[in-house]
Amino acid sequence: MENRATTAILGAGITGLSIAHSLTNSAQSCHVFERSDRVGGAIQSTLENGYLAEDGPNSLLLKDTRVAELFDQIGLNGTKIQDTRPDAHNRFIVNQGTPCQLPTSPLRMLRSPLFGLSGLLRIAKEPFISRYKSKHEESFANFVRRRLGNNMLENGAAPFVSGIYAGDPESLSIRHAFPRLWAIENNHRSILMGALAMRKTKHAPPHRLSPTRTISFHSGLSELPQALARNLPQNTLKLNTKISAIEPCDGGWQISWTDLRGEQKSAHYQKLVITTPHHAISTLPLPHEIIQQLAPVAAIEAPPVTSLVLGFKRQQVAHPLNGFGMLIKSSENSPLLGVLFSSSMFEGRAPEGHVTLTCMMGGTHHPEYAENSDQIVLAELNKLLGITAAPTFRHRTHWQHAIPQYNLGYQKVLNALSLCEKSHAGLHFAGSYRGGISVTDCIINGLTLGKHLSKR
Ligand SMILES: Cc1cc2nc3c(=O)[nH]c(=O)nc-3n(C[C@H](O)[C@H](O)[C@H](O)COP(=O)(O)OP(=O)(O)OC[C@H]3O[C@@H](n4cnc5c(N)ncnc54)[C@H](O)[C@@H]3O)c2cc1C
Image 1 (tube, rainbow, N blue to C red):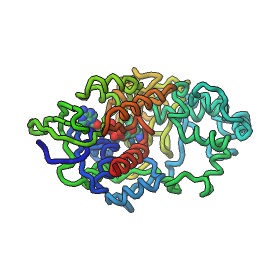
Image 2 (cartoon, helix red, strand yellow; image 1 turned 60 degrees about the vertical axis):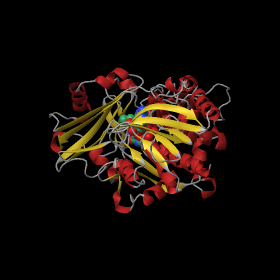
Image 3 (cartoon, helix red, strand yellow; image 1 turned 90 degrees about the horizontal axis):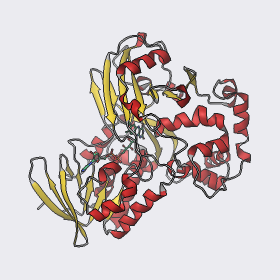
């Protein structure tokens, strides 16, 4: 038998670590079981030959006081936080084979090949458009088309969605995938008027941190899970563990596992929190009835995405790379979803005189593109950014189930999770398939659940 702890957490991604941090901060004991030999899950940074590659997320949005407090508590504050470089506020959208800068003012919109006068006039009508009235759940695409017009959907919003979800705007639910936008329409009718009203403190969301910062850390985003893990009490984290049994027992949960030395162990916990990715839940040795209840969770669509990080000599790239990156419209039929100009986003991503690009491919529309060869990617980079030379660095990561898609009908998933929790005392689920996919959402949801559990 293992030493006692109140809560077992399965998975040491950002969600599991945030829950563990919150619990141990309230003097509650927990064990975090992680199958692999490292913490962080999707957050993984690799430093190689002077290049810093991110396998998963490249940045996070610091926009909430609870996240800033967490960073303070784990010593990731002040100069340890890396803000984006000044050029990174520029974003590009590929239109007819050319990266076009996304305009940031009405005048620039007027001159932009992406919008023009008709696009601008249609956006100006937004404050006069009424709320959605149909009983049918609305897709993200329909929401944008209805409120801002087709031009805005195709040339701005849809590429933006492929950058976040690698998903299909016609299938994503506005209510579940973009709950804040959905709520603005509900609360203020117009999203433009609502956005203006929310600038005032009276209407500002609680915990809002202003201004919002897009950040990382000097050794990459991995510094965050590593700092969280370092701050946990000794013996909390159990890496390289294989869970062999999970059984309800005496109003709690009996968990058995094999540790990194191959020894069989078992312990009883009052609470069990599962934070593995949604597709891994059905592979856990859970009672059959729970697996059955969670069938809608196992069915969540999560298409494959590949991230290919490439380094080049600066003078071999014709484009100035003066921005965050470029998103590619689906009508371009590109083999890529988008490219992050990683070394323009943050300092220290490439050796002197070199640049780093992170190319994303795959997603809902073309899952097969996640298998694209380097040659295909290089030919596209040549076309879009004028890169003729061979790369000086290469780092490729394939995510078979990259991002859970909050598609129409997602309420079924949420209902299944709530029902399963209600019918099994002490059982909880958290992760990117519930309450938001971003690193920031995972942290906030993890801290909130940890706080809730420590009160019970
Ligand atoms: C390619 C990509 C790019 C992204 N870009 C961004 C971005 O730029 N900004 C942003 O905010 N978000 C981004 N995201 C989303 C964000 O990274 C994830 O949603 C978030 O990190 C998920 O965290 P998590 O802890 O819920 O899950 P995970 O990170 O998946 O962690 C789950 C953990 O559970 C472990 N596990 C699995 N099975 C078991 C088992 N049987 N027993 C024990 N442990 C197990 C896994 O090994 C893993 O460590 C991106 C995601 C991907 C894939």
